[in-house]
Figure 1 (tube, rainbow, N blue to C red):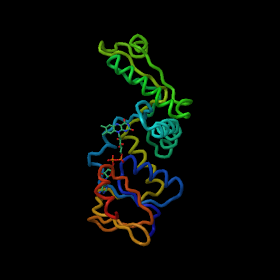
Figure 2: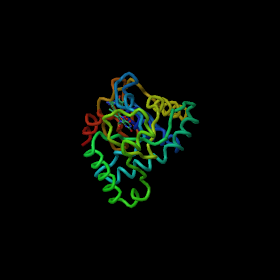
Figure 3: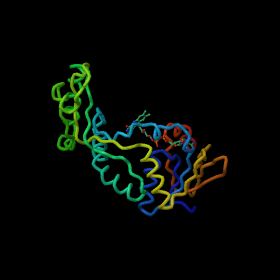
Length: 223
Ligand SMILES: Cc1cc2nc3c(=O)[nH]c(=O)nc-3n(C[C@H](O)[C@H](O)[C@H](O)COP(=O)(O)OP(=O)(O)OC[C@H]3O[C@@H](n4cnc5c(N)ncnc54)[C@H](O)[C@@H]3O)c2cc1C
C-alpha cells in the first residue's frame, strides 16, 4: 500500500481530484484509458458558467457560483505550477432567448432560484436585456434574437489546456500516472481496493472512481 488514493479515470474530474490531493501531500496513483479515447473532458466547450446551472436544485446553483468565484485563483495557481496558460477569462456571459416565451421562462426560473436560496438571492447577479440592450454588447446580432440574460460570473477556459495543465502540475507533484491502462474490475478487500487491468493489479487504501460514463461498469463490482 504505497499510495493513499487510487483514482480511476484521468478526465477533468479525476485530474482535478488528483491535483487537490497532491497539493495536500497525498500519494496518488491514476489509471486512465489514455489520451486518444474520445471523452467529454477532451470535447467540451470549456465554459465556467453559472447561468443555467441548478434550476430546480439550488445547492447545485450555489456550488456553481462558489466554483466560479474560486476559478480565478485556481487558474492562476495552476498555470503557475504547471507553466501552462489556461486561456481563462471571466468577462461575463450572455445566454440568448429566441422569443418572448423563452425570455419570460428564463427570468421566472432565475427569480424562483433566488427565492429558494438566501445565498443566491444575495450573490447571484444577472440581468435581462431586451434586443436593443443586447445590441450594445453584441453588435450585429441576428434578427431572430429576442433578448438574453447576462451574468458577470460566467467565464471560459481552454479545456484541453486545462487537462494538460492539471496533468503537468500533478506529475510535478509526484502523481503516478498510468495511461493506456483500462480497469477491467475493481475489488474491495480488508485493507482497501484493488483494480485489475490487463497490465497487472494496482492497490490503495482509498479509491475514487472518476471514470465518467465508464463508472457504471466499474462501481457495481463491489455492490
Ligand atoms: C459536448 C459537451 C460540452 C460540454 N461543455 C461543458 C462546458 O462548457 N463546461 C463544463 O463545465 N462542462 C461541460 N461539459 C461537461 C463536462 O465535459 C463533463 O462533465 C466532464 O468532462 C466530465 O469529466 P469526467 O472526468 O467525469 O469524465 P470523462 O471526461 O468521461 O473522463 C473519464 C475518464 O475515465 C477514463 N475511463 C473510463 N473508464 C475507464 C476504465 N475502465 N479504466 C480506466 N480509465 C477509464 C476515460 O478514458 C476518461 O479519460 C460538456 C460535455 C459535453 C459532452
